[in-house]
Image 1 (cartoon, each protein chain N blue to C red):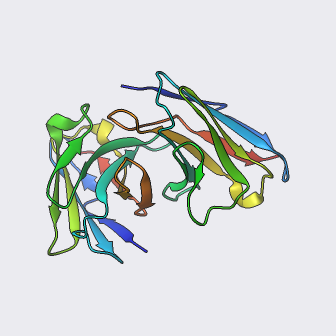
Image 2 (cartoon, rainbow over the protein chains, first blue to last red):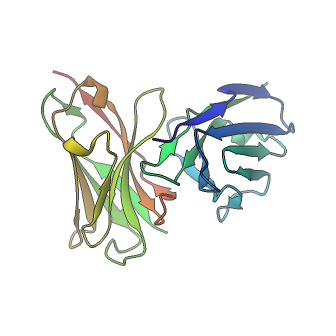
Length: 107
Length: 119
């Protein structure tokens, strides 16, 4: 199975800051990577698919990049409503697998 | 927009079978547009894909759970279901049903239902 490693596991930033999360796959997954946002007590929400494509209705401050084994998720200007845990997920090989998550908090 | 709602017992005894149903609204499960997946999340932990089904009844399962999982679909009720047999405390989790766009991209999710395995 492909292992997905996210870092950091948590971070604290100020409103307006640029936030970056990385996700590393244990083998080449091309661009078959999604990013999800999960707010406390809620279901995950798809933000980005195919590594860099923004899901319909998702604010443009969210972006993703990368291919192969190394991927980056960025919030260009952190907003209070962005407090959540973010997960990457590969779908190159079965089973689809999620990273361990990055918890984003406001400083 | 498609909406999903999980239902089923919140408490299951060890060694018994966990059974959940996902009711789909805002779209037909038999439209052929999507696959229908189950995903779980133990408290404070990450997400684990369990398996999925297509309208035709074709299924894919996580190999780590395959021997214990059955996913079925009832197009007349616009529902799909999960059965997980021989449960242990390790199966305690929030269980989500989700729309799979077809490439294991999970676009819509139910609110989730907590299932506790305990005697």
